[in-house]
Image (tube, rainbow, N blue to C red; front, side, top):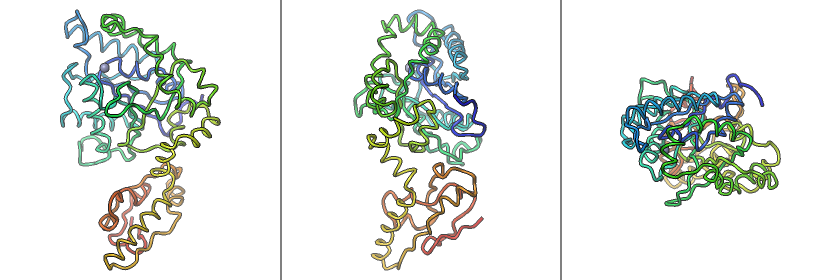
Amino acid sequence: MARPRDGGWPINIVLIGAHPDDCEIKAGGTCAKWNEAGFNVHVVSMTTGDAGHHELEAQTLEARRRAEAAEAAKVIGATSLVLDHHDGELQPTLEVRAEVIGLIRRLQADVVITHRPNDYHPDHRYTSQAVQDAAYMVTVPHVTPAEPVLRKNPVFFYFMDHFEKPVPFDADVAVSVDDTMAAKWKMLDAMESQIYEWLAWLERTWGPRFLPAAKKGRKALKRWYGKTAAAAVRYAELFEISEYGHQPNEEELREIFPFLPPDKGRRKHGKKNAKTEHRSHNFSVGIDERFNRCAKKCQRARRAMGQGEFRQPRRGLRSEAAAEHGTPSSRLQYKPPLNGLFETCGEGSERHLPIRAYSSMRCARGSLNSSPVWES
Ligand SMILES: [Zn+2]
């Protein structure tokens, strides 16, 4: 597999779990693959894990958990970061949100992975809440201004879980980890106080516990690996895209998960994954079409309001921007509208204009009512 993509994207994968062991259990095999692909993998635990034991007192436990997390991260060449919150006491406060925003910015995250918001453990729920609350804010300069703002919103994913309410987990990406299970076992092996003591005391066993993911993710596995290969997968790790960060198209998903097989899955994915297709179309691919829809809507609104015709900006802005900035056009994102278009456009229109590559420029106020005039 290709070694580091200098200056490429994505490069920084940040996993944010509630406890030392969450990220390893949910995504250890995939982390090993990311490391092989030359990505930087950062494993974060929001709490010290200092409550989860039937015998050890907090201080001793915390010291062990920190050391074990570091050891596990070493197995797959990741960095380990255990924040200072007490296990079982995490709250989604403003301070915690600021901490998460600062962290995501400092690590220059391209991808962030966390729990889903409905989960049995309050720390999991509040970790998810804090990360979701940060998902947009990491791009807002005046929020937590001490840390430089991210200019590209990361892609946020959720770890797989089995909770059904209010909505069951829905895998967008399934990764076969049969070939990296050895590394995952080794990571878990390093987390002695958790895996062999506490969770053993809770009577959790591990081989069988990891098996249902492949079954749960069979559809997604088929999509990405093809029917035959999917049927042979024993261990899988699954990820669902959060709606709150950048919405990756298929090309970007393949950049994030470069170890997914290239050809077969693509066709199946394109045909069968209506959900991702829909997302690709809406958020990353059909910029011109999308703009046209918006323009039509505006036109109707403007006519109705007696404000005359709305002329849409010429096509090709996207490829021009790509050429000018040396960025593949699929990476360009919308910026929020800069003038009154929003008012006439109605619901949802804030996503439509213009593209991020122009972020160093300004669209002259009012100019969208004729054709856009870009100012440096
Ligand atoms: Zn946990």
